[in-house]
Image 1: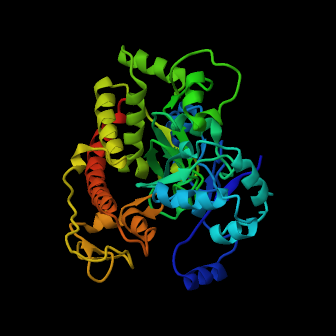
Image 2 (image 1 turned 180 degrees about the vertical axis):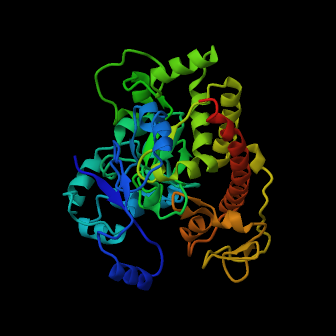
Image 3 (image 1 turned 135 degrees about the vertical axis):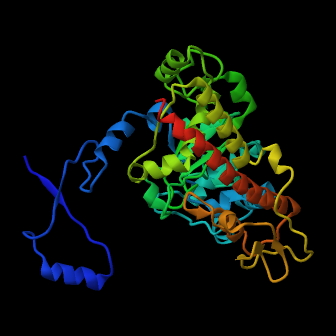
Length: 426
């Protein structure tokens, strides 16, 4: 059987060239590797740590139903900051008196794209629809950036129905990227929460998987009558049960009950996982493995510890959904009158300037730099609103985001203190 050896050097290019000139395959100090499944990596690994990590449950196994976020291929048309701006576009699109050429030019839509989407045929199909108001819903577009979408099968290229149907109901989802290095971040940061359908590019460079907490029956007639969004995505056969069911493998409930001598709820599992994935200790310890695959989750055998970490995960989730009561009093203020127009966001000494006169204050450097999914959250949110005039609600939202990130940093420290005990009790 073949053997694998490894060696590497660090430094400037000139130093590397000099080293290569003085060495060949015979006089290099090689380290023998033992690549293991499932990736057979040709780099050094902590074999003992890897073996331990492999015993944990992978998130794709914990939540059996999962898929990527949706792809519209027409974001500028069907997604907007509010319903009104999308509605104006839909009116133009559905106006029979307007030619296809005029609609194409006005809405910047191709008459026919490379995927054979045809504007004329799409409009013909669209005319047959009634109750267009029912196709408006929220979408988790980027971290902390929830927008409106006209979620219609004629206009959205990839709806990812089997997952997103469950997020048209009262639900939660953990969104996780596969390879931590893909976003360009120095640290693992590709985890976020959603309560609505999710865009494919939630994280930088896209491709996250969405893991809904609950699955809803797929053919409830009364729901089909109430909600066209649900109706258009339903498919047979008829369900064998009524009511929502947890999207968590049954074996996990059994294992936890065996360890804790009592039942746990789907929410307790969900929030525990969310907290663990936000532990900086966890992220650093398993950094090499998180660079190449979906995370695995260690479950403590200590019930009190499980519950305590889950409570921190719930606090974290509420902060990220901007639903926490802790956000009623924000640490950032926007107190200078002006145009409220976002020109070129800039951070200076605790202030984020949106133009030459106005700024948000009370923002620490660590909050301004905080990243989720490869995006610097505070900067990204404002950049996506460049040349827009912020509404009062948007100003309040930004102050809440700043506060949420500040409290996230505090919570991560608390989670780390508990996580040190988790691996002692796995």
